Image (tube, rainbow, N blue to C red):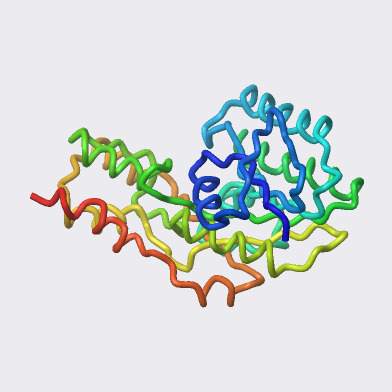
Length: 269
């Protein structure tokens, strides 16, 4: 196998992918893609946040369209597009989301993810490139975004936490290094196909917001702001299932318990 290009190599997932790929990995800058000697590409790039506006989402979409229209993809036989399983299916209570479920994007960010998937599907079908779309559940690391990284930041600066979600909301959480290992496995072991393939990729470890706060509270006291208000918000629980449970369940995932013990243990008073 030639080198594997990673677009977004400096991001949370991209940096983990580069570690897993080692000498096989090659960082690609999407403003100037150079794909000599690259036969596979992982698209892990994205500048829009999950709270982006419609205007910001449109700018991101146009950026993706420019890359697909201008870059020379002739050496590439396979693309892995990392998408978001936590948003594109919408929020239907506690129902498990499967790959063939209808998409119900409810935010600008979710609609952006669906549109990017469609752009890659059309592009790869027209170019004869094999496309694998992986819809990921929640990713965490010490440098990431979201509740876990916010907990670590607040543990260091001693500031209060502001919860804007119902504490009983439950999601799956997986470390970026674990996701990277599974992404590379999918890349290598899922055969090339003329028809785009879509799979959910998620950790088997599921936690509610309250679970996370309880685990973190063993090592640090957190002053919760607006907890009463947050508890009145609707549940935002999104969990995925996968057509490849053996890939997921046979892998040893870093748990939040172990991660937070490592990160917060030395801060315990």
